[in-house]
Image 1 (cartoon, rainbow, N blue to C red):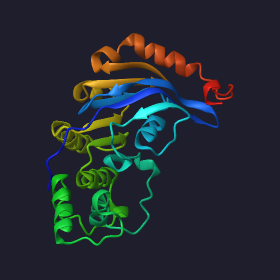
Image 2 (image 1 turned 90 degrees about the vertical axis):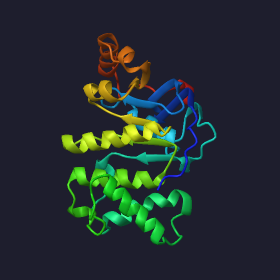
Image 3 (image 1 turned 90 degrees about the horizontal axis):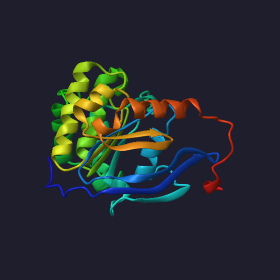
Length: 252
């Protein structure tokens, strides 16, 4: 089911600023996601983590700075948003959701053959949902639905994978199974970037961490980033945020 993978390139940020109503959500961040890296993004609520992911994928424009994806197109980055923003009321089956993973290579308007359907079945088997192809997504638990979305990402076969709170509100067994898939992607040379809140999980599974509080607090090896001093600095910055403050001068 997998084609040989060329190692993903580094993604470099230089002075990146993303704003809403000209107020900074991500403020002048610079650094790089190394080729084939496995990186957690952590920080307080409202720290700009989702905004940074959206900028990485091209879904959110930059207000300042540059973002070099190493020659990757937007379609080379597989993006999984938070479950809360996804509508599960649409009548669609698990198999049909997984088949959407082929769109990166085929486009949404080309028909799918037996080979593509077979790969979708294999992907569902791989995430522990064998026999779920015809099930409607509205009938699934949060953990089951997340497994379906990971199966879809398997078929996207993208060199860079971006996950926004992928383990939120799912059970421990599902988390463990999906973490094994994340480790497999990383082992294949893909870059994986994930917004996470559980620092113990980050320490156990993610060798690189970016700590964000709208501004960059620290970025590097996880144990060097997740220190009490850095955590205190991030909390102090979060407590000092003023939503009614003036605009970002450099985004004017």
